[in-house]
Amino acid sequence: MASMPSARAAPDALARRGARAQPAWRRPVRHHAACARVRRDARLGTCAYASSSAPTARASGAGGGGHLAVGGDARLSGLVRVGGAKNAVLALLAGTLACSEPVTLTNVPDLRDVRSMIAVLESVGAKVTRLNESTGDARTVSDVDGLGTLRVDCSRITSSAFTIDTVSKLRASFFAAGPMLARTGWVEMPLPGGCAIGARPVDLHLRGFEALGARVRVTEEGTVVATTAVGDDDDADGACRSTAPLRGRADMSLRFPSVGATHSLMTAAALAEGTTVIRGAAAEPEVADLARMLNAAGADIRGAGTDTITVRGVGDAKAAARMANDSKKKGVLDVASVASLGGCAHRAIPDRIEAGTFLVAAAVTRSSIELEPVILNHVRSTMDVLEAFGCAFETSAVSEKSRTENENETSREVRLRVIPPASRTDARPVTFATAPFPGVPTDMQPQLCVLASAASGVSFCRETVFESRVAHVEQLRLMGVDAVAEGETVTVRGGATTGESEVSDEQNAYAYETRDVFGSDLRATAALVLAGLCAKGTTRVFGLEHLDRGYERLDEKLRALGADVARREE
Ligand code: EPZ
Image (cartoon, rainbow, N blue to C red; front, side, top):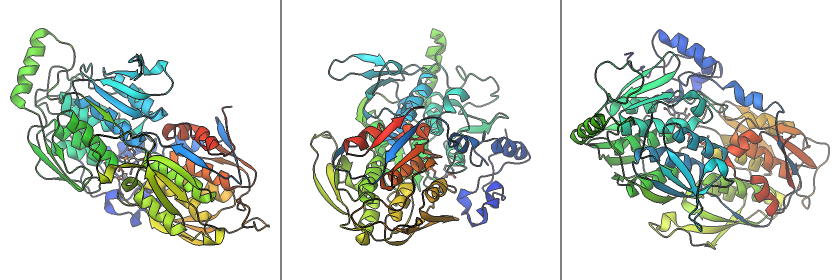
């Protein structure tokens, strides 16, 4: 078995884009001689180790598919309901693989990514139904519109090998690798490959699996095979091989607080035998939400939401061996569990990035709107940038008291009103750098660049989490925004006019010309919609295939706030 790659990464494609400036943790790790092949595959976007921007994003930005026709000079008013958090729900769904009894998830948004993750779970035997809470009626999700409440039953795992067909639609599928490895002692998971915002390697996940006692290798085709089995491992289906749970690790540290690696390793450690301490963990609210669900299902996780997480695993090697023998005797074909949690009911947290996107929509259209539910602590850093811009905020109780259990001051849900600066000249330039939570979320960076374009003066927006998350800048420039991306920093000269005519304070619109613009990823497309609200005339924003992955009915919600936004499917 090839040994794990050393962290010393030699410069590659990224080097041509000034990777020299990249901190070590951002350079893809390299293998030995096989690496050349891996790199070749990576350039084809099939392997995460050294991949560069996958071709798909740009291709999809080339004017194909539907668009939103966004009317400019918009004014918004009213209340918008914030849905469940996409990035929490994806992790929660992957985490249900650790549970051998049904999990009921509520506040689940109907998003393309959520449906892709459900397909990933169903591909290994999970039964996922949408529950109608009032009638109790359970329907398969493919037959229904709207999700809301899901019952996820992973009591039977029919395979621990994920196929490229299901996982290739969703990078976050890789979050399921840790739970599956911990549950069955075996996982086969294709490498996710890079995307428009960066190489996005998964070396931290793989190193973590090794630290928990698993053996890890990457096949010729770019599939990760990880197992706790000892001895020869060449027959693909791990049904009757591994009996050992993972082993807790007292000192596991992540060189970067990767959200996905923290989700995956925290869940895996919950099923390990012994205690694991993850230092340098991601502290994102989505991590704390996953820990809350796993604890409700019988795990013992403490410190989630901070950079040090302690997990006392439920794994028990002797019990696992007994279970495996029993299922062998019974000739059970399902993949045997080496460890598992029970079931539970859990409500996903509200989406802080959707909330942040609407806050920016209000600020750039100089409108006052209300949002609920919002957890202030989750959007604090975004609010700080908006306050620097000149916005003010008011909070009040949510109309629908939805969170009752384990609600404390930091996770209390409120209704949030945003009050924009009185005039354009009161809209001050901003300077921010993205960072892991509690820093400014990288998923708000493109939208905050649009905010900067509405300020009177020069703003500096620095991206420190992903190495190529600036594709929106080129599209904003097409609309007449004076923005330049150099290395990690986007410099935006706001309120500037590139058109011949100044715009008065009364008018909401800036000098943006209407054009067809193309989103290359989820947040970039949302940012272009926000810019369209401020343009003169109607802007056609292409890239719905990205937008629908992370925003539930964004056009409808904007229309309900008074915007002129129409969806064109052609
Ligand atoms: C999650 O992605 C989110 N996705 C992303 O949101 C978000 O941008 C990101 O966290 C950061 O907040 C979901 O939750 C589904 P990471 P994830 O592992 O987990 C490097 C959106 O728009 N890294 O924290 O994949 C990596 O390359 C999406 O909703 C390694 O080097 O992000 C990146 O530069 C986009 N090795 C940085 O860490 C690893 O093994 C952060 O990645 C893992 C990550």
